[in-house]
Image (cartoon, rainbow, N blue to C red; front, side):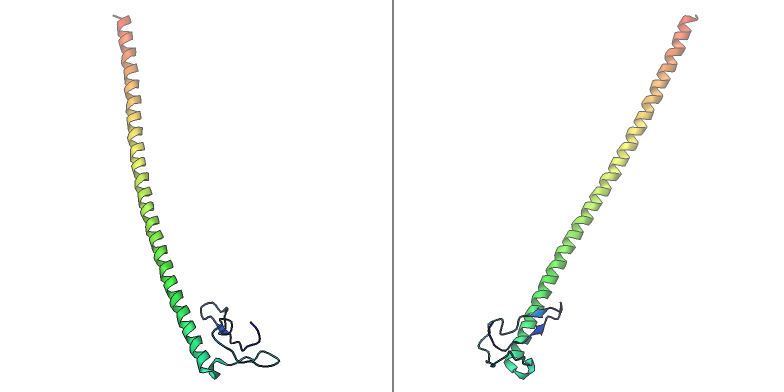
Length: 129
């Protein structure tokens, strides 16, 4: 950026450096020969006002992004909960169906076994009149 006065503000939410008004090209900066001079924001009311405005705008933006992210997370969690309930219902229905099939199978085996016994008794009775 040339040799102008730079003011560094810290982002309150992350601790990282924020661009100075000079880096943002917010107007002419006083020239200091030989080196870049750090100026306290309180020493220049315009810079302090700009710093406050930038910080408020950044905080509002972060608050909006944060609430949107929370809304998306809530929606995803609700969807996952709904899917969990559907899966639980499906598993219960499958378990019920398996129990029905098991009972039907046991009845078929018992019926076949009874039929075999009846056939054996009938054959024996036919052979021994």
